[in-house]
Amino acid sequence: MRGRIGFGLLVYLGVALQDKEADADWLAEKIVNLRIFNDEEEKMNLSLKDIVNHKNYMVNGGIINKNTGSTGVLAVSQFTLLGDARKGRRPSWGKAAPPETAKQLYEYFTEKIREHGLICESGEFQAYMQVSYTNDGPVTILLDSSEAIHQP
Image 1: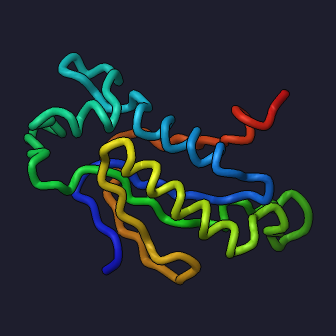
Image 2: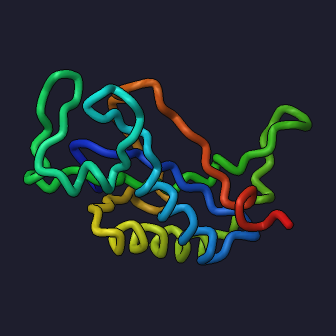
Image 3: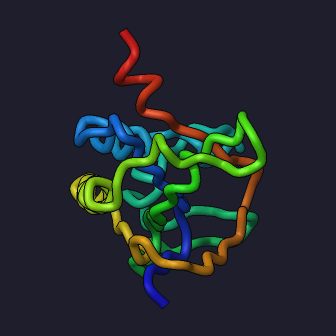
């Protein structure tokens, strides 16, 4: 087993041809501060960073103890997110960064998450992996740095 967290966020990270360190910086900051966890009033007001900074957090009526060190981000490299299936029947991955560039930005991204004071576990880059997770809630969000950084 490579990377494992007990509670937190599973991030599938696809690196595109035009992506730079600024994209990874933007994503890391966005991910750790995204307010998608419920507060005491069941409103999505807490970020992963907020939760890690508290000793305990309620999830489905049970208390998750933050002292276990298992709360954070599991980052899995996933070039297939860049697949373009608009034409034909076989996806094209021409917009995905080459492996050397993608690996460097993937590792840079995981380090940026850690610089925010969070645990960041990872999968094995460019390997076939079996990822198991429990989706505890209705939240799955697509973040695209190109929409935020590369637009005029």
